Structure formats: structure tokens, C-alpha cells
Length: 552
Image 1 (cartoon, helix red, strand yellow):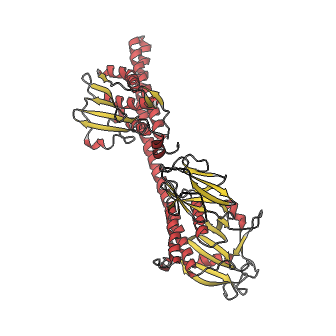
Image 2: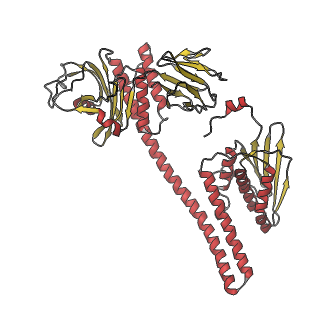
Image 3: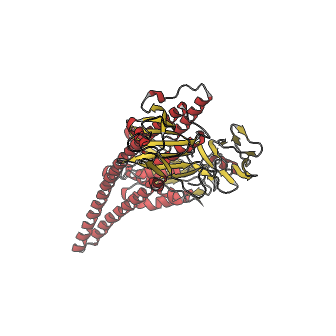
């Protein structure tokens, strides 16, 4: 089945099968869904015409380009054609006879390493030491060299764009099959002392049958021992693999040209790439051996880099988990301590029959219950990816509800909360999200101002020209210290000491950014102002098509 491989763009490294006829390329496609914002919802269309695949543009705003030329009419695709839609570059693989097997479970029975005495003689025609600088290709002065550099460049592009080693090996095999004459290829990776097949790829094989690839155990051992790539052909001149060699000879494969190269990691053979081609179609040469050896070197570096990055990520993840647990444990302990104090006051009031003590203790418990609820809510907001649940709402009503919810906290501290609301239209908002974001900022403002003389001002503003809504909260507190200003939105950074969790402002910024807005900070020794900016201007269909991708 023909496939499309993404070389450039936000989906770089992904492979799509054409599948149904027709096949749509675009952000809202069920066949080839691209996340590139410069790609239209339905950008291009692939369909069969007289047995061949044809591409046509779907009146996209940015056009569809085939091999650098903009499409003006339906055009027949050829194997290796490059398709550009927006900022995404794809390669069309029209070879429908390739079959792929990956993973040790599926491939273990597809490769046989013959260690017996069945006679098939192989002569090493050339070798290339994988650790030698000679495998670095020369400056491209011929078409073959240019072709080789293109292969290396495409493999280099996949480095860092894969999640698992098997995924990288599959992508690398895709590139090799697109650019080299290969009938069969398999990749062995070390598993303890054993070499286990991880990828097996056929260009052609008998329909309905899975044919084993049989090769010499001694060729594999030779590559592992010498750490050099070898170019083999069917002959009887090489004593190392001839009938006189101890332990047997290469199993009959037919007239075949073979390249076998190591995958080196820190001068150790971590794997082997084995490819062959029928001599009736092609015979490998020294330059192709050097190219294959270079590919093996790059594979080793990519795998080692992936392993190091994963190891570092795991260490950082454990460190982050430890930091999170420490901060949360500290916050939860403080909350529990407050609840225990309230419970003690309630117990004392009950023993003495003093309802005033019971009421005071219950207020302490209630405040700490609210702190527990706020901590849990902010933890969920900050840790989860969520899509805002938009509905038409009045932002002023949200602000008024937030103030009413926290009015008692302000009254207990003697803080005056004043409002100045502009005439705002109904706009699309995630009401719960904005309510939480404004509430977190208001709690911080009430905590920051002095007792009995504190002032918090909440106001809204609407810009008719830009469609921007501004929701601001100002206080007359001492301001935020200069050394803390860069970290106020950082999770677990708090200037409140044991009273703060460090999640309130971090969660608020996350909510606002999920709306596509921003949150600004202005502070001085006379007070602090936080401003939430939300752009609510309606977009045209064309604007939306250019700027928004599919839902995530």
C-alpha cells in the first residue's frame, strides 16, 4: 500500500498509508491528519486514476506543490515524489510490494542465522571499518555522492524525533528502502549475548507466504568481532566463509549481493544492519558499502543519544516528583495542623458548653477545608491538559461571583474590595476556569494587603476596536520583591511562607493561556496589579483556517 512520509513540519517523522480512495491531506482529514497550522482543513486529494495515484489541490489558500512546482491540474504521482502543503513536506512511496515486520516477537522467526555445514560460499569483496574516519563521505561532486548526502540528511532529521528505538529503526529502514536498491533488510539488536531481529523488511516475496531470510552466522560474528562493514558476493574465494572454514559455510541464497554493517555504541557492537539484493537487479559497490557503514554509525549515535536523553529525563522526572511531594507534603501538613487547632477549640467548647468557642473552632476548620479544596483544584488544573469548555457568558458576572465567594475572607481582615466594571458584552468563556483564575489572584491580593487598611480594586475594560477584554485586580500591598517577580508564575514558588502552596498563580496563568490570552504583572512598593487579557473578537472562516489547527 502506498505511503506518505513526513520529512519536514510539525508532524516530521510520521508515516501515513493512503488507505481509502480518495485520500485527503489536511488538518481535518481522517486519512492524513496534519497538525501544521498553515495547512487547510482539506488541502490536497490523492485518488486513483487508471491504476495510478493522482494528486490534486483542494483550492487550498497556500497551494499544493509537487517537486517544487505548484499544482494547477491533477498530476500522476511517481515513487519518491515530494509533496509540500503549507510548511509540511511529504515523500510519496508508491512501492506497494514492501512488507514490514518490527519488534522481537514478530521478527524472531523471520531470520535464520545458519551455523551449519551447508555449502554456500561468500567472498568479502570490500570492508569498511565502522570506527574509521574513512566512512565519512567525501564532498558531493557526483550524483552518487549527492544521493548519499541526501540519505544521510534525511536520517539525521529523524534523530530526536522518535519516542522509541524501534520507531527510529523503522524510519531509518523506510529511508533506506526509498533510496537504495534493497530486496530484503533486517536489523539485529543485542539482547544480552544474543542478537535478536528487531526489523525485517521485504520489497517482494511470494504472496501469502512469509519467507525466512537465511544468512551466515559467521558473517554476523565476523562483523561483531572486527567491527567493520563488509560487502559480500556469491563466490568461492574467501577462505573465511568457504567450504574449508571450520563450522560450516553460508546457506544457499542464490546470486545475491550482500552488505552487512555494525551499529556501534561507544565502540561496542549494539546491532547489525544486513541488506541484500539480487545480482540480476543490482550489485553493491564500495561507495554503497561506505554509505551503509555511515548509516550504521549514525544509528548507533542516535540510539545512544536517545538512551542518554531518556535517562536524563527519568532523573529529572524523579527530581520533579520529589520536589512536588515535598511542597505538597509541607502544604498539607500546615492545613492539617490548622484543622487540628480548630478541632481542639471545638472540643474545648463542647466540654465547657461554650458555643462561642465551638463557632470559632468551626471557622478555623472551615477555612482549612477551603484551603484543601483550593489546593486540590489547583493541582488538577496545573497537572492536566484540558480544553476550555467555552460558553457565552458575562465576565462581570463571573467577577461579581468571585468577590461574593471571598467577601467573608476580606471582611475578617478588614479589607475593602471595590469594583469598577465596564459595559461588557457576552463573550465565549470557560466560566469555571476564569472563575478559578480570578479567585486565585483575589486570594493573593487579600493576603498581600495590610489588615484593616487594605484595599483591593477589581475592574473590567472592553476595547471595541480590538475586541479585547481586560480583567484587572489591584491592591495596595507592599508589592513583589524584584528577586521574586520572574518566578511568581512558577509552580511551588510562594512568597507567603507556610501559608502558600505556590500553585495559585501558576494555575491561573495556565487557564488564561488555554483561552489564548495573557496575564500581566505590574508591581511597585505601592501595590500590585494583575491583568488578564482575553481577545474575544470573532474570526472569519478564512482566519480560523489559517490560524487554528484541529482540536487536541
